[in-house]
Length: 210
Image (cartoon, rainbow, N blue to C red):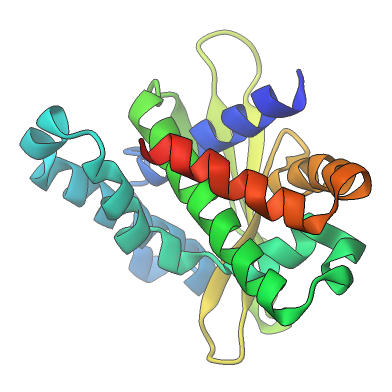
């Protein structure tokens, strides 16, 4: 599976997780990070139901719903640092601001499109075994396929200085969303430079918007 296909697959299943209808356990009985994911799922499902008619006529509405409801749960600066790896140190403050914004927009638009294309795989939460006092946890789950074994999936979260839990990575069957981007970003920076990468992300976002 190539990089583009892996990214699309991961984002599609991320979308599926936040649309999962199989999370029937009350969030009150869950550890905080797991409850956060459950509450995000419930909130997104309600928004899609409430806006169903408008989404049928204006699919672009999904962008604003995803940005308003789901994106506050993600730490895009941390994801950007991880996606760039050691190349993050090459960026000045202005480049960092621009990169974080374009990367954020790319994820929002790609994620939103994946959500509209999601094909209703069943996604189950698995027992939560991490110690929340360590401030860095993994929320495990699995994707149930019609044929074949379940696909392991997890969300990586950390507790920031404001005591808020944020998602900073997603793994599907051992493949990291952040690491997957890192390899392609590193190649582009090596061949064409940081400014070219930022410009390319901006162009991709403009095309996704049109």
